[in-house]
Image (cartoon, rainbow, N blue to C red):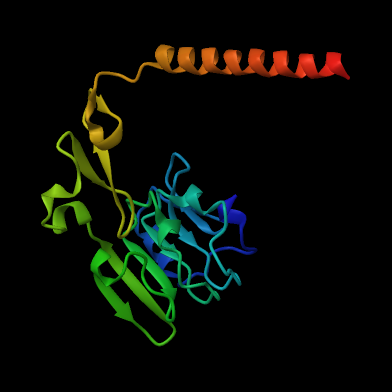
Length: 197
């Protein structure tokens, strides 16, 4: 769906086309560059009159290159790129900042009509602060300028402090008995009111 967001196909001289034609296994389809499995590795939505990438944009989370230049984009879309861990080249309108800021990219280059954010940095390696994640968790990149802490195997819960697996039986047992108790209580009080009327 994201490949058909904009009418027409990718322009011959676009960065996405050049990237796609460099590798024989890749093919162009509408506005996307796909690998043999049909996974999006490039997305060209330039000149599509987009104010934001839209709800289907996460379909392109596997993209290595995305071109969004010549669109009236709103500047604040940092969380739009959550999960885009493979993204290495992002071409934006000149007045829109690279998601995650300059520190999230190896190179930010400004041109007359656009800017290019190149080489997404792994913030887990570059923060220098190993205390960001709890003792039983580890930092994993989650897109440009984004990271998340994932609990180690066998740990879960707040700050990965709980060991073992989450007990679904206990959780749903307590939830079910509480719901049943409240339902019986409300049924009894409503029944009493119905008899007095």
